Amino acid sequence: MKKSRRWVLPTVVGVVALLVGVGIGGSGSSEPADEPTAAASTTPADTSEVDDLKASLEAAEARVGELETEVEEAKAAVPEEPVATVTEEPVEAAPPAEAPAPDLSLSQQNAVGSAQSYLDYSAFSRTGLIGQLEFEGFSTDDATFAVDHIAPDWNAQAAESAQSYLDYSAFSRQGLIDQLVFEGFSVTEAEFGVAAVGY
Image 1 (cartoon, rainbow, N blue to C red):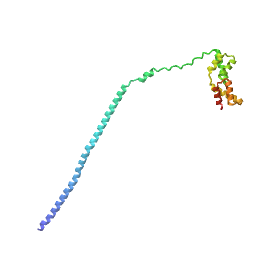
Image 2: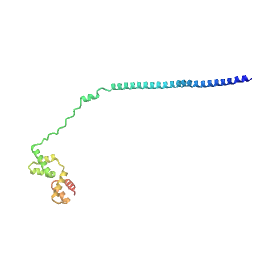
Image 3: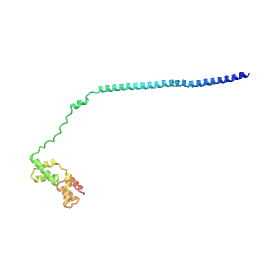
Image 4: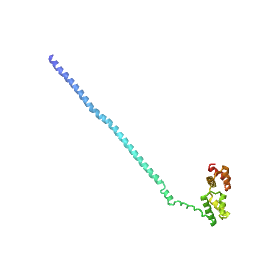
């Protein structure tokens, strides 16, 4: 009886050790088995993403090629030299119109020159300047032509004449208007001249 007990104990210990060893070996071997499975599961996914990117790139390159073709066709459809035709035959600018040469007689030219000289140093009404030219010996026609040819601003002449009177003498408003009318200015011109000097 004592001999059988000695052999049972080692046998039980051996079986337990064997089972533990198998368990450890099984668990150790299971980890490497899992790694290839994980690698195998990720590889197809990575490959499909790469394939998708390649397909997108190829599609983009194809679209670029289509756009380049469309651009070339559009260039070919445009006329080659539309502007060149216009620039080859520019519209000639019309020469500037020359002022017609004044067809003045010698007496008219001299009357114009004399009238301008009077206006350069003094103010005159229209009738006053014509009378001055007649006093110088010009005909009424030449004197009138010269004054109308120059055609000064008679309101400005009335204002200048009014100021000249005030520079050497005192006048009432009505007295200054009367003096300008006496000089040949119209009532409207005389009133404008008087207002211009402050009346």
